[in-house]
Amino acid sequence: QVQLVESGGGLVQAGGSLRLSCAASGLTFRNYVMGWFRQAPGKGREFVTAISWGGGSTVYADSVKGRFTISRDNAKNTVYLQMDSLKPEDTAIYYCAADRTSTTGWARKGPNDCDYWGQGTQVTVSS
Image (cartoon, rainbow, N blue to C red; front, side, top):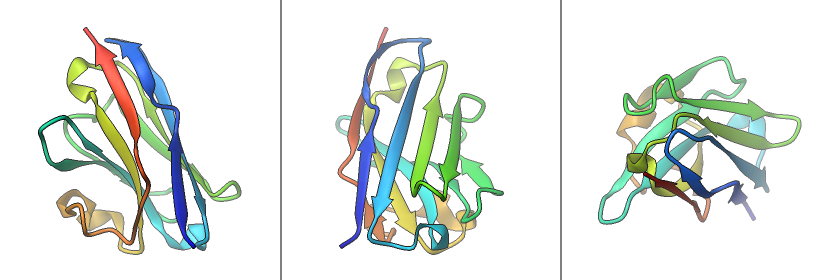
């Protein structure tokens, strides 16, 4: 049984930082591109970032470029999202996702387009 378990969410002031983690089990982690999506209250789920199988390629949504950094540790079956310079508009539930397709198409993925999803972790940024 595949599980993606997110952690690290919380409440932070604008300008602050958080680091999210997603621990994967039940799959061959190095065979999956990993990514993060988020869903703000009253809005649809949107792509945030993705990282390739070996970590050599990354892609980001324009709204987070230069502020968020995705990384992965294949030895620990874990993907991370370092979020800096947080803004109130970053407030959302953040979901980890795993899929075999390359990072190229991730920005167009919808809520049903990844092989596996985590349950999400809440990030709240106060102004």
